[in-house]
Each structure stands twice: as structure tokens, then as C-alpha cells.
Image 1 (cartoon, chains in turn yellow, blue):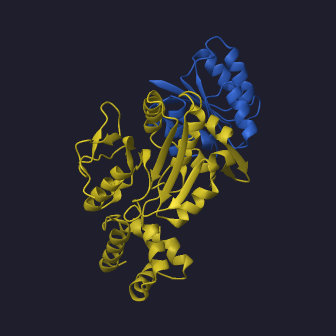
Image 2 (tube, each protein chain N blue to C red):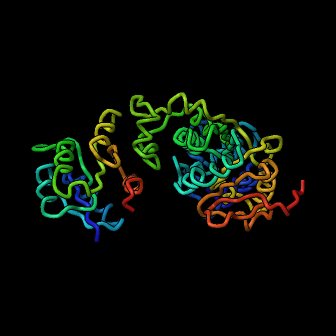
Image 3 (tube, one colour):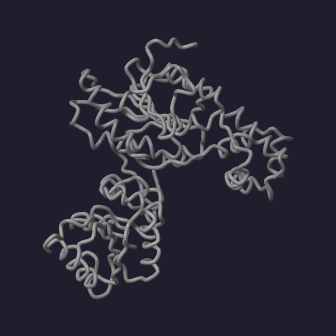
Length: 274
Length: 121
């Protein structure tokens, strides 16, 4: 691809989804777009780009924008956040007598994160009083959501992050794949949402997981998304960020929970701009 | 240094496993079947055992049952690594005292994840 084509795609992704693409990593763009080009009958990526430029077809534009975002995820990714939710967050809500904890995974990709929460909720059932969790997940990618809703994962995917004990407890083997039990699938509501434009009206949530999403965004957009997340987070709710992320550079709306990695609460002194 | 005993009748699998395990900080020893592995353990119990299921002479499950009866045989953390990938096999392995179960084919990512789950990292 030419530098012009790469900058066109980077600009498209930034405007439509807020995702920043490193123009130096053209191989990432190429590997993510190749399936889209094939599916729509283009021989080369240049052909795909010139069609995007000329026809401005919204379906194709969104297919490309969705494909350009990273979909990397895994069950119980980084483990610590889930241990903290079980050991700190749920007991904190239980002490307040909370019976329902509403959790939202913002940018849930192919579903491993909300399903991990649903499995955690099952495993924790009865340990925090009569508490139940309501779990929802949102992602911009139609393709990812389709996979998430199906709840069917490859042997490779179920071996990253998921203990074998939980695999045989919550999944059924179907041919070469593993299918989540209906009980876990039904515990999670999934829908397509663009974090740039569709957050308002959601919530309030007691727990928002937005992990490894913000760091792909343009800084101004990251700030805007975090502001909106603070607007849908309950006053005593928690935000969970990715292992290498922090709200600090982006938003004054949150403050870190001392001693717990990646966990944030709303800063009561911050007044939302909106 | 912590030792991991790789028990597999395939020399290729042992070689691949060795490379991955050495990279995550283990000293690696090899055995080609359960009987060899048992002899190795009677000399010195390893920290971890990466264990194939189907092998000649003595298979993985039989080895695990025997191992747990040996003096000090409760200590090694056992991670199965087998082509058998049905829930029944996984369940039997965990019931017999394995900490984790890897379904072949595997890569370094999966070994690292599973050793992490087993508390070995």
C-alpha cells in the first residue's frame, strides 16, 4: 500500500471509531483488511481503498473500520482484575447490602470478557449474600459480536486464560470447538455500540470494564469516552482498565483505588462537562 | 533452578516443550514413557511434570496414579499435555491429581498460560 492509502485508512478509522493506527505498522493494516478485501472480491488492498474512496459505501466503510480495530482478547485476561472483582469489588457492594451488581464490558470484542465475568459470578454465587450480577457487553464490530453471541470458541481460545476446571464445567465440546453453556450465554446481554457516539442513555453501571480499548484511541477521543463512562457509572461504581492503561493521562473524572491495580472510582470533585 | 520433567514418547514434542520451558525458566529433563518418568522421580522429584497421555509401557494417567503413591509424590505439579481433548479425559486427569490440562497442538502461549494457572510461574 502507498503512504497515501495508509493515511486515508488511518484517518477513516480515527474519524469513525476513534482508533489510532500506527502508520509505521502497515503490516497490521494489511493483515486486518485482507479478509475484508477477499470477502468483497478485491484482488489487492489498493483496489479496496480506491473503492472506499470513490463509492463511499457505508457498509463497506464500516466493515473496514471494524476490521482495523484490534480484537485481541482472552478469557480472564490478566487474571488480576477478576481476582480483585471477586475479592474486593463484590464484597464492597455486599457490605452495602447491594443485591444486584450491574456490569458492563465496553469494547467486549468476541465476548471472552463478559463471559469470564458471568463465569466468575457463577463461581462466586452465595459468597456475597443474595447478590446477582447483570452483565452486558458492547462492541463496535458486528463480526465480533456475532462470534460473541454464538459463544463458540476454538481449542486455542479456550486454552488461554481459562482454567481446565472451568472449561469442563461451563463448556460443551462440539466437534473441534467448545460451546459455552446456555446458562452462561443467557447471563450476558450483547449489543453493538460505538463508544464514540452511543454511550449516553446506558447505565447506571456498578462496574465498567473498559480494558485495552482507550489506549487505541486518539487522546482527545479517549478523554471524551472516559467522561461519558463516568456519566454512566454509579457514584460508588468501579471502572476497570487494562493492565498497561491508566485514566491519568486522559481524564480527571476518575481516581485510582489505592493498592488495587487498574481499578478506578469516580472522582467526586470532578464535574462532568456534559 | 526448578526442574520440569517432560514425559512424551515423541522426541519432537519433547524438543519443542524443552525449548518453551527453558525460556520460562525451567531446567528440563525428559522421559519417553511413564515407567522412565517414575524412575526419574524416584531419584529426584521435579517441581513440575508436563505429561502426555498415550505412551507405550506406561501411559500418563497410570503414571500419575503411581506417582501420587510414591514418597514425596504429592509434590510435583502435573500438567497434562495430550491429543485427547474430550471433557471426560480432562475430568479424569484433574480427578487423578493433575493441576491443568493442555490439549495438543499447543504453543508457547498456551504452555505459559497453563503453567500460570497451575501456579508455576
